[in-house]
Amino acid sequence: MAKSIESLVEKEIQKGSTPLKLDSVMVPAEGFRDIDNRDRLINILQYLLRVREHKKLIWNDTLSANNVYMDVFLGKTDFHRAALITGREEIYQHINWYGGKLKPDYNGKTVIETDVCAFSIAEDELEKCKKTYDGKEAYSFYFGKYQIRSLYADCLDYRKNMARDEVTPHATYAGTQQAAHDSKSPEAAYGKYSELFRLNDDVIRAVLFQCLLLDDLKVENGMVFANLYTIYLLR
Image (cartoon, rainbow, N blue to C red):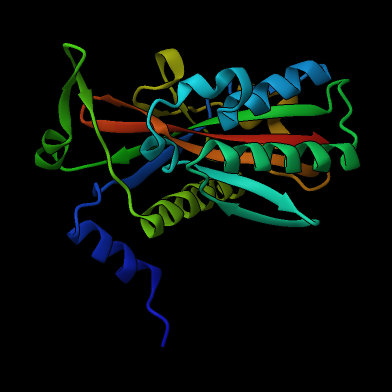
């Protein structure tokens, strides 16, 4: 019998993986942005995949191995890690090919959503991750491959439940701090993007790209934050 993902994650944590657990996903009011031209789309994809002029964002391949990227190869969609620049370049080429097939409309029909994923961790475990880098306090996290897959799946499930339940938690100042529940309706909170917040299939034509970036984690008030990005093509 195949081992459950939970047991595989537990084994990775026992071997030293950082024991993060998803606490919540927040969609800031400013979390939706139009992509109004192809050059802007290309720059965003290069940034998210850390390729071309943005490859300098990765100074250690161990960090980039923590990221989860959507890939499309021969028409099949998959999600996986890509530690090396060659792997990320391949995904970049595949997504460009996919975008060529889908022909994005830049008149308000191509939108990037940035969600803030908040993870909890025990205080003593977080203390173990504390390092000094270049004379400053920093944190170093290690994640197993099954753990990364589980964290990604948890973020997606939470986001889908938000759309279903119309819960609109948002992130306060700078979009990376504590979660709070917004009493506003999705219409009031997100305006023209309210149906996109609901993940309404009547307005979403396709997902062009998605990724969870765990190479740029932020720590505040004992919580760990990462961004989940999704590029939608709308009808």
